[in-house]
Length: 104
Length: 409
Ligand SMILES: Cc1cc2nc3c(=O)[nH]c(=O)nc-3n(C[C@H](O)[C@H](O)[C@H](O)COP(=O)(O)OP(=O)(O)OC[C@H]3O[C@@H](n4cnc5c(N)ncnc54)[C@H](O)[C@@H]3O)c2cc1C
Ligand code: FES
Image 1 (spheres, rainbow over the protein chains, first blue to last red):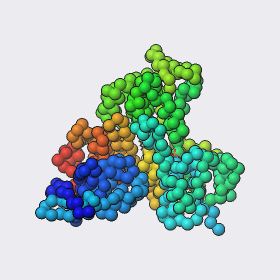
Image 2 (spheres, protein in one colour):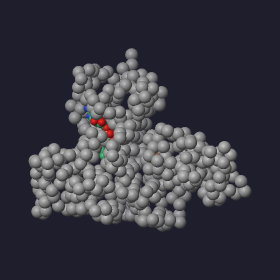
Image 3 (spheres, each protein chain N blue to C red):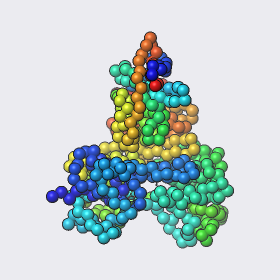
Image 4 (cartoon, rainbow over the protein chains, first blue to last red):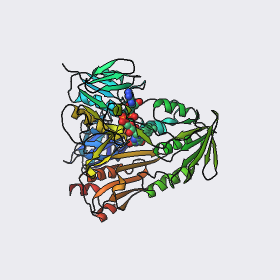
């Protein structure tokens, strides 16, 4: 379970923003919070499988670009219609300027 | 004794309102009455790519398990036929009566009928899942589909029909498609996408007559052209469902008239979603009726809060989307409020038109592009519109300046 993979450089993502990361046939979303922490979730919305990385990050919320469903990207919690299924989250660490996620 | 909350119409708005009442901690009886045989479901997929699948499935808003878990009583396949306001009772088509403390009318809208003789079984409308399945059966390679009305539902269906190999003709009486609410520049791009996919679009010519023998429809245009089709789908707009409210003596004004808190002319009866007209605060209280999915959702939740006494005024900015082929259109605000336009290009052919009022206030934004290219900036524009911001034209037009930075200003 220690399959950490390098997703991007820490500077690749702006503060309060999100980036798409594809690995091993799966897609993830990597977030940088306003207070400069990094997080990762599944890349696709649980409503209609749309890439969340096209959405808007505000504080600890990612808003889906398609119908504005909301999730807390730190916990994966679905935060309001039309989404009701939570997002899976993944451990993240920053090492020597690289963002690593445990895709497990 | 508490009589509880009754919601008429188990669609997007009614379904969301019922769930919201429970999420807000309301513990009395919640009854959701709908005349369709299904669980509350989403209508947008009915005209989109989901239609092109072998066996389209219903996209329910709440499962029966969730409704049971939340103690929401869902009475389906039954119509509400009368409201006795004095007694606080609703009478249903199965003869039963439901008492209420507060009543929510979420009866939606219904397709506008083509007002001419000659329509038969090959002339259909789309509103329900049942309508969608009936249409789906005709969307196959070689079949000829005529779509009357170049609005969103008609154009989305045209795209789905092309995907399945049907030949498609769109008939629009106005000089161009999407006359209502969509800027010409964006309508032009959608028009071109349809033509490139092989759709024939005929604009600016009204229908003179329709002949339908149950096997084929023949549509004659005023200009003399004849269009023969295996199926004609009529998508010329929708009218609010207000019969029940009107008979109960509630004020009707392009829909069930409600105040900013979604209260009708009877303080114990609320109305929300496609069936109501309400004052839109962001445009100084201009009375509008919206036919939009997110509005139905938000108003359902707002009505629930106000049925419980929150006294909260509607403050949202209208928002709408449509998908055709790989293109996605999103509109925030009502573009007819604008007097001038600033264009912002986002790359890959995606762009946004910002609509500004005379005093420089941002009042609407219309965007189109592949996938979800315009989503983020439209969402930011929506927030700017909500804040009644007057962003500099140069900032709106320049890709180098992030819209998010304007929001902080
Ligand atoms: C094909 C299609 C595609 C769409 N696509 C989009 C889109 O892409 N984007 C967008 O923003 N919007 C879209 N919409 C609009 C959106 O679906 C509506 O705005 C939304 O469904 C309105 O919700 P509502 O609950 O107010 O009404 P509805 O969803 O219409 O629900 C009302 C319900 O009440 C029932 N009812 C009425 N009277 C009674 C009665 N007396 N007793 C019992 N039941 C009653 C009706 O049968 C219906 O089931 C689309 C609509 C359609 C039809
Ligand atoms: S696809 Fe994400 S909210 Fe619908």
